[in-house]
Length: 241
Image 1 (cartoon, rainbow, N blue to C red):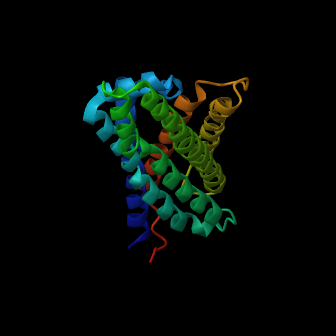
Image 2: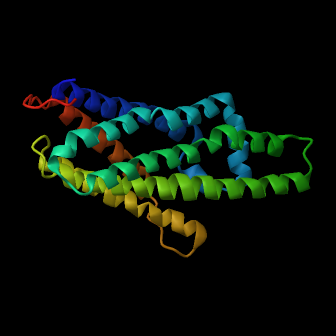
Image 3: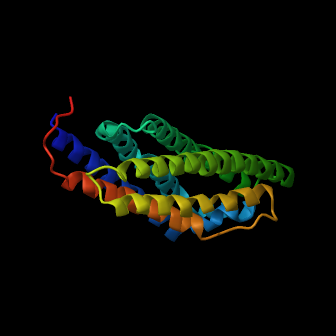
C-alpha cells in the first residue's frame, strides 16, 4: 500500500472513530445525565438505569466498541511516525492500546453486570437485605470497574499516549505545531479529571468537576484534527510496505 493511501486510511479511522464515539456519548449525556450520574447514590443510579430500558444498555455497548477505529488508527499511526525516530513511540503506542482495552472493560460493566444488579434491586419482590447486598456489590463493581480501570488507568494511559504522540508530531512535517499544542492542552485538562477520582477515595480532595467533560471533548477534537491532517497530507515520496 502506498504511503499516502495508508496515511489516508489512518486518518479516516481517527475521524470516523471520533464521530462514532461522540454519538453514544451525547445520547448518554441527554438520556442518563452522564457523567454526573456516576457520583449519585446507588439507588438513584440503578432506578434510572432500569427506567432507561434496553436502549440504554445498547448505548453503553455502542460507546464501548465504536471507538475501535481509534485503536486501529493509533496502531497505524505508529508506522507513520516511525521515521521520526522517537524513542517514545513504542511505549506511547503500547500504553494507548492498554488504555483502550481497560476503558472497554470498564464500560462493559454497564452491559453485562449493571443490568443484572438493576433487575434485582428494582424487583418489587426483593427484600431489604438483598437490596443492601446488591448495593454493596454495585459500589464495588462501580469503583473497581469504573473508577480504577475505565477512568483512572484507561484515561491516564490515554493521556500519556496523547502527550507523547503530541511531542513526536511537534517535530513532524505532516502536522502544524498547534496540533501538538492542542494535544498537550487536552492532556492537561483531561489529567485534571483525575481529581474527581481521588475524591472518591479521599472525600476532602479538591475536585475540578468540569475537567472530565471538557477533557474528553478536547481528546475527541484532537483526534479528529489528527485525522484531518493525515488525510490532507499529500507527500508521496515514500511507501509503507
